[in-house]
Image (cartoon, rainbow, N blue to C red; front, side):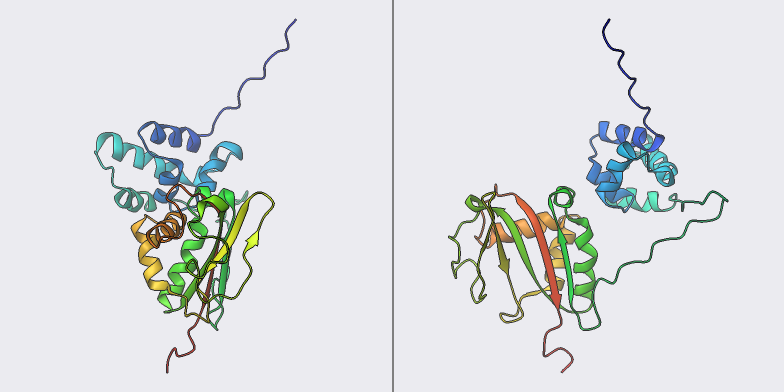
Length: 239
C-alpha cells in the first residue's frame, strides 16, 4: 500500500495575497518595497506564517491594481502605508517595536555586510546605512566578492583599485574579494551613491554592480555574492 501523502499546509492570507500580486507580474522584491520591508519577510509569509500585519495593506494594493489601474510602485507604497497595522501581544496591547541599531557612530564610522541571501533581495539592509551616510556628508568604500572570471583586470591591478595597499582575498570557491575606496584615497561621496541606489529603486546590489560595470572593473554578467559598505567622516569636514 503506497504511503499517504501529507496535504500541503494551507498558506496564510498574506501569502495568498502575495501570490495574487505575483500572478499580476509583481516580484517578492516589489511586494517588499510596497510594504517597506525586506524581501526576506515576504518569504516568511510562506515559511514562517508571518504577514498578518500586512494583510489589510496587501488587500488594498491588490484592489488598486485590479480595479483602479494603479501600477506605480511609489503610489502603491503610499497606499499600503495607510493600512499597515502594528502587531499586538496576547493581551491585545501593541507589540513593542525593536529599537533601530546604530548605523553610524558619532565619529562617522559605519559598516554593513550582506551575503548571498540578502544579495538576492537587493541588499536592502544596506540602504539605510548609505542614506544616513549621505545625510551626514560622509565618504564610503565597499568590498565586493564575486567569481574571479567576473573581474576585468587581474588580481592586484592598480588600474582596478589604485592606491589601496592590500592583498586580494582569494577564496577556495574561485571567488575573490576586492575593495574599492579607502580613507587614504578619499573614497566615494555617499550622497552620489545614495542617488545611484535611489535610481535602482533601492537595490544596493544593482547600484554597486552598475558602477563596477560602468567603470570597467567587472563584466556585465558578473554576479556579486557578498557586499560590504564602510563609511567615515572626511578629515577636513567642518573645517
